[in-house]
Length: 591
Image (cartoon, rainbow, N blue to C red; front, side, top):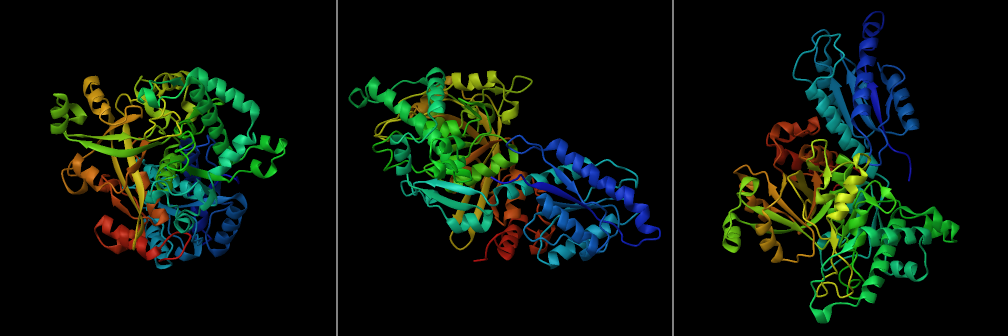
């Protein structure tokens, strides 16, 4: 609900008239236009809409111009501020002073006018006023009339804008908690203050019994249900029932469970975003939804001890397609792990792609693999692997059956996905009946193996008493093991669940000394996995939200944080902790 945020471009200028300002007007405004063109041509929202940039009506030479720009930005719904200039300006007089809008300043690196001098003065002013801003400054000197944006500058502009738009898209939305704490998992104990103070997100709580009420009273779109059930029967092939004969359910029971999990999917979708069809049916309150940008379902134990699990619901919602066709993926966490949902949301807003939800389950050393299989790991996997697997709720996009132009496995933004991509994902997924020793109420878990090799980034927000939230992340790759190795390893856990074999990029030191250390230092039982190496984007986003990063394997040269962070000491990670502690959460109070 609400409008999409816009990016505001602020061309600031030397306010001295009778020669100085007039000589810079065109160059200054051209910088703003070039930045806007770069942003609009490069980025899109996860929903598919293009980014809209708003440029100040005039260059900004003093406080009156700055106020006029601020007024326009407020009317236009600007939530991101990028200031550009090729010259000296009057630092604080032309400043953007809104404390809740992420801001960056690009100072042109040219010798004709002192754009770099203004950049330094502006950043000092922002730091002194407690308004952290990102500084953007090219490595190479450009000629005064050069209208191009250097590669290093464009990378920083795009990294900043992606993170800032993620901040803006979260603000004012909801996390939908269906049920509450699952099996004592701390991440599912939804912290309403963390959501509000750091993300600007409200928590909405709905008891699981609401699903039963809506099922029993037919509070869902009957036409969509018929369509969804037919699509499910055609495309979701039931897998082998691995339960013991005495624990296997009858065909009639399984068919009823299929009907129920489809209804659960429709209802969870309606709870998140509403459905105008319900109003036509006489359910006005139910039709409005909860304005949820993400959600989670408690499931275990009370629900799944006597009702079908939500694995199907979670998998389909987290995928980029369903019975209505190809669409934006939802962010929906199993076991109501709110912290993993947030981590998934970060990846989704930065990449526009579906996200994996997995248990970070097992580290397999090369020695252990050879002992149990008689085979050696090779290639990317030669130094060990991490088994990412959970109870069947991972996005079907993670089958890696979507193909790029060269035929390589990938995961795409939904508007790039083809019908053939969708069909391959469905054809390579089975839905075995749930293991009854875990799920007494039945249900169906997705079962697939992530194919090929894809660049991945796994991240996780954790809450630490006395510190607050911290973010950890690791870049690496999915790997495809030889079938004989995969089968032996997979059969040692629950083979009815989806598997992704993951290899982190190691450095030989610290938390990334080796694959075992990465596994040992991971801070929770779950991880959110995104396609691509997006660690640098996550680091920039975290700094905007004042969440320190406690673990990452991103090259130091790619770490991009507000300029004020350099005032908190030389070590990048220690400075990050001190800066985040100093400024406190973006929307709340320091603890």
